[in-house]
Structures are given as structure tokens and as C-alpha cells.
Image 1: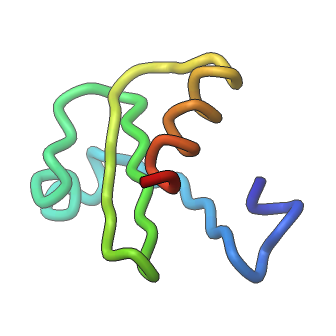
Image 2: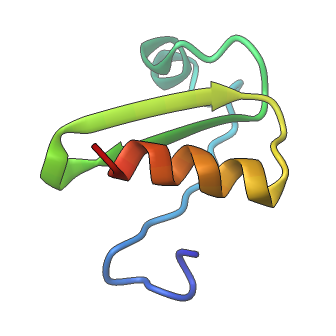
Length: 66
């Protein structure tokens, strides 16, 4: 998604062991952990574990829709 719309979506991959302080701040206890933040709406949501593409899209839609 970030490749398709780089002006609006940023994707990053962080190694939890190398950034222990950031991992603790975000509450990383299992990997993968996905953190989605919508700055315009001041909304943040996260989930742990691998998700199918369909489940990921449903999570994202739920974050964006009231």
C-alpha cells in the first residue's frame, strides 16, 4: 500500500531487539506487530501476529470508518 500511495502511506519495518526503547514504548511483546496511525484523526491501532491480506484490510477500514 505504501508503494501505491507514498504521499499518504508510510511503511516501516523495525527490528524490535535493536530498538528496545521504541519496542517498549509501543508495547511489542510478540512479532510481527503492526501499528497503524492516522495522524489526521489522531487514531492509533495495533495488532500482533501475521494477518491475511483480507483481515488486514478489514482492520484498516475499521480504523478509518466511524
